[in-house]
Length: 507
Image (cartoon, rainbow, N blue to C red):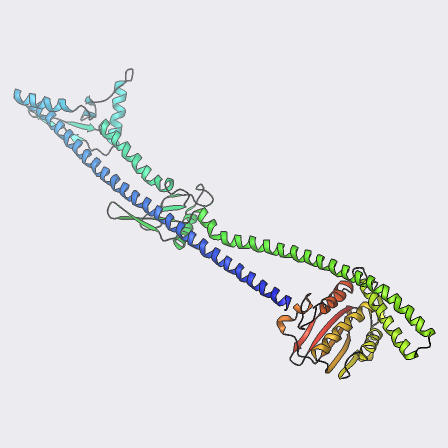
C-alpha cells in the first residue's frame, strides 16, 4: 500500500469538503441576505403605503379647511350686509333681524374703517388689560391688509350722501388653531419619511426625481449635504434598489429612494470575511502542523541514525578482530582484502549514520574524485548490463563545498533507484555543469519515468513504487542535499524514455 498516495487522497477529500463548506456558506448567506433585503423592501413599501394614506388624510383636511374658510367669508359677508341694512332700514322688525345676525358673530374678528382708514368699530378681539387699544387695533389692521382675506365694501347711502366704509376680517381663533394643526400635520408627514425608515438610508423626491424634499440616514450624516451629493446618492440607490412610488392628491407621484441597511451590507460581505478567516486559520494550522511534523520526523531520523551507528559499532569491531585473526591463519589474501573492503564500507556507513542530526563539516572537495570513488564502489556491485558514464564540462576539475561521506550516500541512493527503475538494464549518465556560483549535477537514466504529478512527492517519506520498499531513500537524499549541504535537488525532467535528477550545490 502506498502511504503517500492515501495521504494525497485524504488531502483531496479534505479540500473537496472545504470547497463544499464554502459553497454552502455562500449559498446560505445569500439566501439570508435575500430574505432580509425582501423584508426591508416590504417594510419600506408598507411604510410608503401608510404615508400615502396619511397624505390622503392631509389632502382631505386641506379641502376641509378651504371649505371652512369659504364658510367664514360667507358669514362675514352676511354680517356686513346686515350692517348695511341696519344703517338704512326704518322697519323695526327688520332692525331686530339684522341685529340678531350681527350679534351672532362671536368668533370672527372684524374691523370697520371709513374712507380715511380710520377705525370706526371693531369686534371679537381679545385685548388684554393694560394694552393700548388704539395701537393694538392699528397693528391688527396692518396685519389684515396683508392677509389673503380681501376687505368687504360696507358703503351705503343716506339720502344723497354716501357713507364709505370697508370691513377687514381675519380667520377665527378656532380656524387659526386648526390651521396650525394642519401645518404641523404636513410637517410631520414629511419628517416621518426619515423617522420611520429606521436605519435604512432614504431620499424623498418629487415626480421629476430632482427636487429633494427630505432625506435621512445618509453616509457621513445628514448635515452639510450638498445637492450634487444627494443626486449622486440617488443614482447609487437607483442601481441598488428600485425606487418606491407614492401618489399624493390622487395625481402627484413622488418617489422614495433607499439603499440597504448597514447590517445587510455587512452581511453581504460576511461570507468572504469568514472564508478569509478560515483560510488564514487553515494556513497557520497547516504551517504549525507541518513544522511540528518535520521536527518530529527529524527527531525520528536522528534517533534512528544514531541508534543504527551505535548498533553497527559492536559487530564492526568484532569483524575487524576476525580479519586480524584470519591473517594469522594464512587465509587467502584475496578473501581478506574483500573482507577488509566490506569492513571499510561498514565504517563509512557507520560514519554516515553518526553524522545524521549533527552539522557536518563541509570542505572544498574535488567533486570529480568524490563521484569517481562512489562509481568505483558501485560498478562492481550492480548488474553488468548497466552502463554508467560520467562527464564534466570541458573535462575540467570542479570543486564544491561538501561532505564526501554524506554526498557519496546521495549518489548511491540515486543510482540504486535508477537501476531499479531500469530493471537492471540500461544507461546512467552523470553530467556536471560548472556555473559562476553553482555546480549542477544531472543524473539521468533510461527507466520508465516518473509521472509529473509525483515529481515533488517522490521526496516525501513513505513514497515508494516498490512492493517491499520503505520509501526513505529519496527522502534521505533530499535531507542530505538541502539540510546539510544547503543545496537543491529536484526532478529536472521525466518521461517514458527516462528521468533526470538535478542537484545544485554551492561552489
